[in-house]
Length: 174
Image 1 (cartoon, rainbow, N blue to C red):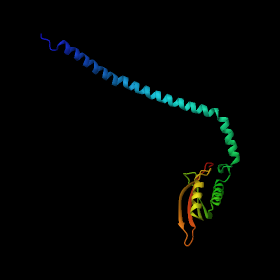
Image 2: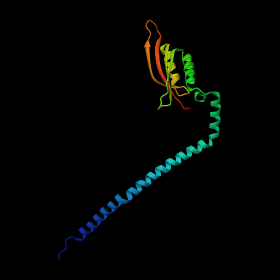
Image 3: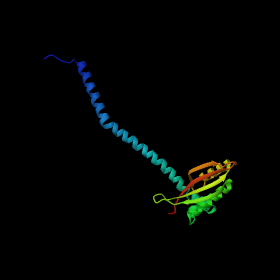
Image 4: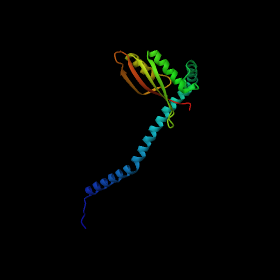
């Protein structure tokens, strides 16, 4: 019986079959295990970083609480008052006065059944620079007021503008 493959070809065949079997074994078994190990290592590192952050915050807990107590006693936030709508109205009035805006009409809107927010529509008069300051102070206020919509119109034969604002605040107490 004649030999079909020479010794060199037979060795090459064994090496090729061995490489193919190893590649299949690696891709089917080892690669998923190594990838899972990398994912777990990333999660562990992330958890360690969070733990360091939380332990630092926990160590500073007393300092943070003291600063909060000092801040909350210095400023009475609207959420702490009994009537949230009155608090929003009084804050809007003080913001408008500080910006140089005159409020001509105030219309409290009803709070929605699905949304717990206080909505107020106000009509105002003032100059453009005063409006810019008013809008900025509303957006930066401590009581989280947001302007839902606004419209500015020029008054005839005057440098003043008329404005209509729809302003809202989340009602946290209800």
